[in-house]
Length: 244
Image (tube, rainbow, N blue to C red; front, side, top):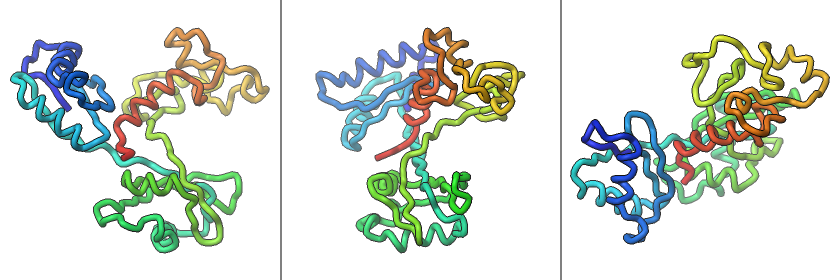
């Protein structure tokens, strides 16, 4: 994370200083991502640690810019179709003991798995288990079918995007939501989706977030993967997570 010692600089001015200082094109430095955050701070990321060190060296050579290391969040993974009879301890043991081939070569600092919560599945005998894992474990789980007891649980990525489903909005939880009234995720009306007659009658949805953003196309649910507002917030949320 980079910022300017000059408190009169705007975020755009700090970004321009970084661009000129790093000079990625001429110095052949591969910058993976760069974005502005609050308080005139800029987040810069590189996939390769050596490239990141080159960026740091450039910034430290420039007066007026300060740099601070930040640790990205570990990614989330969801295991589908895990038998509900398994306790949390059973699941953690099964992941490690029955899939040793997946984690060969990982050091103790690279093998991190934390049980977060369970989601209901259509099959009442199974649940979907959400885990927070290290980037190394995430890569191996999502590339393989995960064997657990009697059933086969497939691992895939879960979005880290936070949301308030009663409003509905993205990028914050209920505690920080400033909206005073609920909004339907299907039609945008002043009610919950479960009470929406249009949703019950399978009528065309209308995204309240895209309506507020004055988007041209609003004929989708706020939960749709096609929603540009959801995609924008999802991209921002994923940029704070280390997948490698």
